[in-house]
Length: 392
Image (cartoon, rainbow, N blue to C red; front, side, top):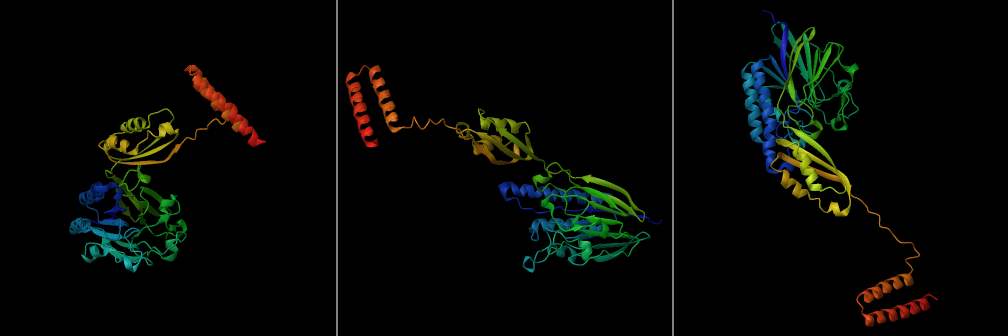
């Protein structure tokens, strides 16, 4: 029976073996989150049995991942390859070397094993041809080019070849219709530069699932499989399964992973409150031993309240209630208390001296100490006389 469509799993931005030094010993457990998300994608790929697996960049979080992570990835891709699923990959801005000194991308060693086709060139889109059923498929791609300026359209510098019944290209850049935050700045593909005969543009780099259509071309970011920063805390994570024919996209399924929860809480402290009690009680309303909690503590406190604030005590009270806690108290400020200053007239030295001695005389009277009172009165009269003479 003639096969009229191809089945594809599209995966990107798995960021295996990231670095989270701020987590201390827990960084190794956090690294496992990224491996587990990848392994889940591998498991689903084996269940779905697609014709092709596309990896559109940042399989690894860096160009020099540790050997345990490399081994797990190698074994997983070997298993997929042995099931007859063709694997095509590019490297992204994280796992493409910036210079000769950084060495080769870790994807080279996977390609050397024969498990994947790796499009390693960065200034030229390479093509590979395969046949799926009766369909001739042209799959092309280029790895991320660190020398391209952000204002450059990569498809003006290199063109995807159109040589099959179905044409697919894999890149790791932004695309103009999707507005991104400065954190995702990268060279941007313009709609007008996309070849009309390109059926599918498999993109990586943006960590949120996105699907758009430009003419006859479907463009998809599957997003990342695990949350890498608090910029992604509300985003679902996953990858896509799709079926593609000469007519275009026939089916798409977004398959979610189970990312670690990230939670941000903003707390505005006020004068008169117990700052530690307020922060701890507010945080405990969101208790979750699996979550990484970020506390953003704001407010203006008088010195009396500010001295009661203790970050270490807050962490001690919450450390067993969450996977990890980050405290950002840069916006917690001292409330300047205006001191009532007497007028310049009352700051006159003679009057201040007179006021001071008068108070001492009054206290001596209350104690019925006539001797001391007399001494103070004498000091007052003599002192005033001397000070008046100095002033004159």
